[in-house]
Length: 375
Image (cartoon, one colour):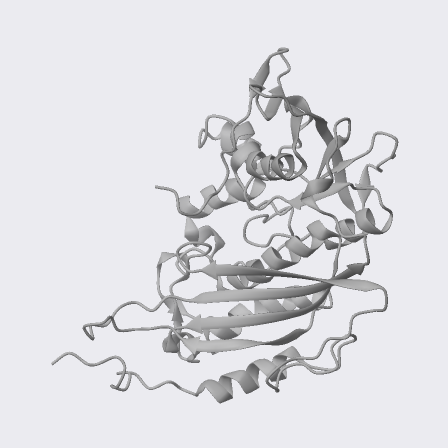
């Protein structure tokens, strides 16, 4: 007779319960952070923003099989990416992180020290005989320590392992990260501040994350032992949020509008155009294309590296506009800055985004980046 998932015990005992899991996370997260008088342990955390600051809040959901795969991504990469997504949103607002809140829904076997990982398409013992969840937290907390972001709370739940008929199914992991940041009052960077005549800039380079994802899908075993890495070498597995660059752009009042490149340049630039009621003209020759994207084209994986730069997504660079009178340096906080086009007045029956080619053509650009709920 099928088990009733609401009343029957799980066929495999959980090595420790929710309270023990929360205690372990609390011990690893630490306490006594500036701006967080009270963190994990009570019903709510207490935050204390600096005088004259405004609070900004963002949330990002990371779903197994959508944002990461256990047979492709190491747990450290999944944890790093989970936090990096939210930190990149703060960077786009010019905000400084105050605290993170993590909610985890995981199958019970992922918190077992005897868990085996499916990374790289084969089962192998987890490193240091620790669980997938331990290693996920390794990746998340290492990035949090780099940017001094306290983990101040969250929630945990066991993901369902039985369907409504009581049949066993594969439990999937999900992680929701909430980031709280602060920015000086009136200095937050918005999508709606672009005006005709402003210069369009991007940080870093484009298309690298999509190119590394292609390599990951072709040979997951190549990345099976990768537990940490720099953005330039591993822009998909370990993206680097541009927090310091974003803070500088806001504090020095250089940028007028900004967004992070999570869905792809074509889609995210469209967001700025729509929010600001403007058009955009970009120069193909000015786009900083990541070497991994160029290598993917050279190896015949893709027709053109330009497609990855325009539509690839998950680069987590900053796209921003600035007045022509502002002298933007070539690098900010160690990150290269590239002018790639101009904001134009919006005209009816004209494309909202155009790309100028080296041959002198003007090609309409359609949003081709990531979008959920498409058929």
